[in-house]
Amino acid sequence: MLYAFLLSGEYPELAKAEVEYLLSLSNPTHFGRVLVYTADFGDLINRFISRLALTKEVVKVYSICSFEELKDVIENLAEYVLLLNKKCCVRVKYFTPGSMVLGNAKKVKDVEVTLKDVQVQELEKRLGAILWRKGVNISVSNPDIIIRIYIFPDSKVIVGILVFKLNAKEYSRRHPEKRPYFRPGVMLPKLCRALVNIALKEGKLLDPMCGTGGIVIEAYFSKLNAYGVELYPEIVRGCRTNLKALGVKADVVCGNALKMPFRDEAFDSIVTDFPYFQSSKSIFDKETIYSKAPEEFYRVLKPGKRAVVVTNTEIDFSPFKILDVYRIRVHGNLVRKIYVIQKSS
Image (tube, rainbow, N blue to C red; front, side, top):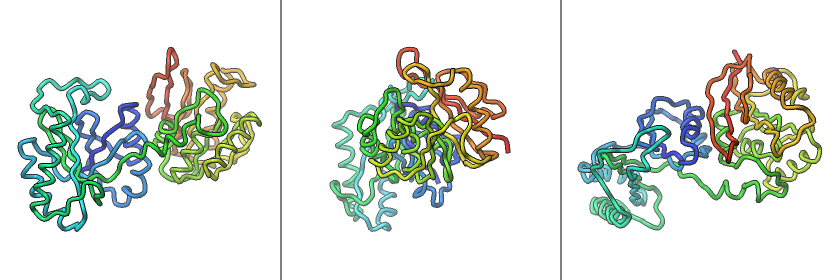
């Protein structure tokens, strides 16, 4: 079975990593920001796809065809939709040549199909009419299923059933500035969720420098057992206030990330954002934290498990194995480096 993932334009490389780590996928076919993977998900659709933060939507692919073949494909699809006995509608998205760029990919040169918004709307009506004439129950306002069609400028078309659509409001309501306790410089919820997804599918996740609680919050809403450690009592109280306001049940303790009150190999994953020593304070110097913290992370992490660590500088993570490094620019000279590291089995 093929599944198409429409990635967010915010952090496309990180979005790809989120899909591949969370769903154990690899080697996609690229259609710009749409990545098509071969997958036998089983129950992964219900359990994990809804956790994606940097994917706008996921489509279960029925056909990949040319624009000229689209009418015939829709006529054939009608037979499948009739078996479902559900109300449906057609939604078309056209990707302009400029929108096809992902990371360092080149723009499309051979443009064969060009559509404007008005033409997209007209195409939706025409394709819906084909289904209606075949006996399909069409409902534009209240469909049970959505037939999603991606049209690319080189005439390639993806046709399928929409199985996931990102709920942006979910993340908006958890924006740091909407929480009772706020401190500047924290990561936004979608980024926190993506890092959690890269780190772990199921189990116990620790943020040893949890601050106001952004990572702990997203781990909880990912149905993980979330734990946090924070050095400063004032911030611990603020973090707990945020968790309570959002209905998050997680353990956050006041403690030192360089010597945590946990047994060896207690956690399935670690996700944390190191202090940058710009807007954040610490009773420890930068060199001490960056040299000692990885040792403590290694101690409390189970063998073979991953940690995702965000920093603004280079860190020696030995004896961890570095799996990937991603870089995202925040502002000015501040670039977040995201390390995906693994403890040896």
